[in-house]
Amino acid sequence: MNLVLFGPPGAGKGTQARVLQEQRGWPQLSTGEMLRDASRAGTELGLTTRSLMDRGELVSDEIVIAIIAGRLDRPDCADGAVFDGFPRTIPQAEALDTMLRGRSRQIDLVIELKVKDDVLIERVEQRIREGGRVRADDTADTLRHRLDIYYGNTAPLLGYYRGQAKLATVDGMAPIAEVTAAVAGLIGTHAKSPDGSPGRPAGRNDLDVRAR
Ligand code: AMP
Image (cartoon, rainbow, N blue to C red; front, top):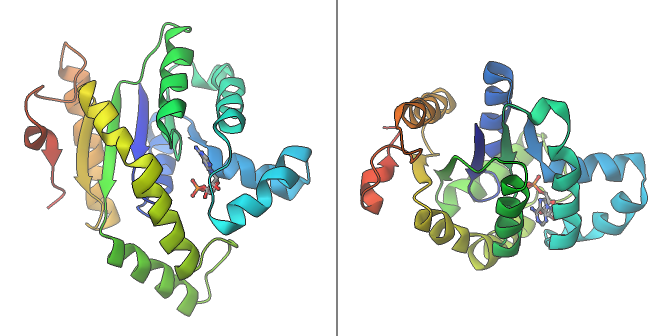
C-alpha cells in the first residue's frame, strides 16, 4: 500500500510512519529526514537546502520531487511506502501521482493527523524545556512560521485528496497508541473495500475517524 501521512509539523507523522515501517515493512519516505541526512553528510544538496530548512521555508518542488523519484525505484518500495512530509504542495502531489502511475501504482490512502496549533506549539515548548531540542528548526517561532506555510501551501492538498476520495482523518491529539490503532483501523478498512476508497466513499464527515 502507498500511504501518505498528512498533517502539520509536529503532528506525529514520523512516529506513525516508523511504526508502519516496523510492523508492515513499508519504508518511511521522509523528505525532511533525507534532506537532514544530506546536510549532515555535507553534500551539495545538503548545503543548498540547509538554511531554508533551518528557517522553516520549503525547499523547491523540483528538489524534493527528484529525491522521491530516485527513492521510489529502490526494491524496498515494491510493496508500498509511507510518505511522510511529502507531498507538501499541489505540484508535488501531482508529480507523485504521475510518478506512481508510470509504475502502475497509486496513492491508496491519505491519513490526516489533525492537531490544533496551540497543542503543536505546546509540544515544541515542552521539548525545549526538557532539553530535547535536536533540530535547528525546532523552536516555537520557527514552528509558527512553518504552520503559516502549512496552511498556505500544504493544507490545500486536503481538498486535492478529498476530491480523489482518498482522505481520512485521525485525531492526532490522542495518545500515540490510540493514533496508531486508528491508523491501523483505516488501513484495515481500506484493504477490505473493493473500490480502494478509505471506507465509505460518502461525505467528508463519514471519512473522519476519531481516535477517541
Ligand atoms: P520535516 O522533517 O518533514 O518537518 O521537514 C523539515 C524541513 O525540510 C521542512 O521545513 C522543509 O524545509 C524541508 N522539506 C521537507 N519535505 C519537504 C517537501 N516535501 N517540500 C518542501 N520542503 C520540504
